[in-house]
Length: 618
Image 1 (spheres, rainbow, N blue to C red):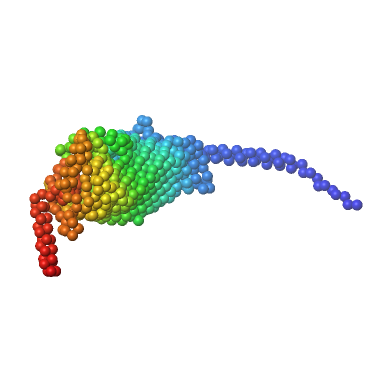
Image 2: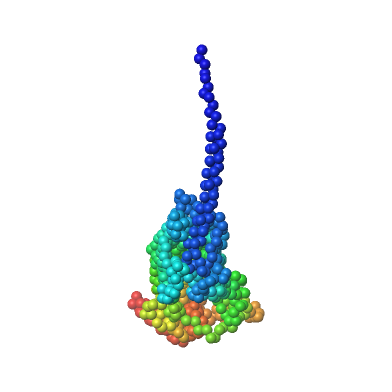
């Protein structure tokens, strides 16, 4: 029989367990104490490192809880605060503005812990600050918030007590997350607010010397989820942006006391939900999206508008004289081959092509108000030449646009003209080539009836322009709504076969020629405050005097007339075009002596040829 013999129980095993537990507790306590003491040492070292720099004379640093990872060299700080010193011991008279950072969390990554503890020297690779509130106070046109080293000053302090200036440092990454910023600019009387700001800078290098600051970064990314500003000095009452993003590759910034220069390899930007209001609160402008691409040389704006905040009639009432009130909206504006370098560094707008799609333009004018007799509008050539910023735009195209013009006439009645299917081309928009010409070509349909082509060239050197227009065949009765709104006449019947006219306008007058072909014209006069029978008599007289056809017979030569008009010096170029049109129409139906003699000569020549042909055929 096999007997199982149990080994004797060691009497010291229980004691060993007790000793082991005590050792674990002791080591844990020592580790916890060491960790806490290390945190305090690192916190003290961070303060010492900060206090070595001149920035501590102006701004005080504080933070709450600190934690450290010795293996990775990462330090985390909570409740970070950097704010101006209440009673600074040393003052820097050139500092004219300030900032404060409150409530953020700070991560210092890959810190050299040994140098920090032994030398109070902060060496690290990355800085990340999240969810702080930043307040900025600006009190100068050229704000200075930090002290810099004055290399021209005489150093009278002992090296032991001398504070260091931030002359240069390099970070692999500098990151701001979820920042809320409020800026009060007392100098420009402006207020700015920004929400959820995120900033990322890679390979950040700062070099600070007396009178010059340099910042380089291999890549910069900035975005925020909300921005608003109010101002009393920039001509705008309010600006709002729902979202913004900016990406810059290889950026370098240099700032001196009076200049600022920067360079980059590429940048891209997008603005979503932009809106602004003018200082007088009469107008607001905005766009759904604005996209800019430096390398592609493009700028695209979608759903852009410029509109009054109140009724156009109410806006016109705020002005003492007649004034055109505009409302403009477009589906898209696209600029191609934009020279951003020329615009940024030389303030020269240089664009090859601008396309404007589906623009809707509304114009209102109250003609019961007096005309401003001290206003003398210039032609387009002179208006462009007067712009101070150099401009060169090779071509602007508009497609599928519409225009509605409404006016309150002198008698208080309202008249409206509608122009649809407007397609235009503007060429050679510049103020740098006085020997050249600005050209406009446009095709449109008036009141869905009359198809018009207009071509104009404006001289940049002299206040003059040339124009030519053609109107295709249409029924005159289709324009009755417009004709009755602007005149006491109604077209009972009649068809336009074609209208062509051209001319040249100088500063004070214009002259040209017109061919107005029509047939079966019957007019009904509708004079106000006149009995029906009187209007009938006047209509009969008008139709008796006015020729119903041009040419009188299909085989006869048509009338081509010359006209001359005096420019209304208080009105613009469109008034010259309209007066030329009406002047030519008047000369066609009621020609002056010169046009009568010219037509008689053509008729005489026609009858002579007809007589000769008949004689030849006998």
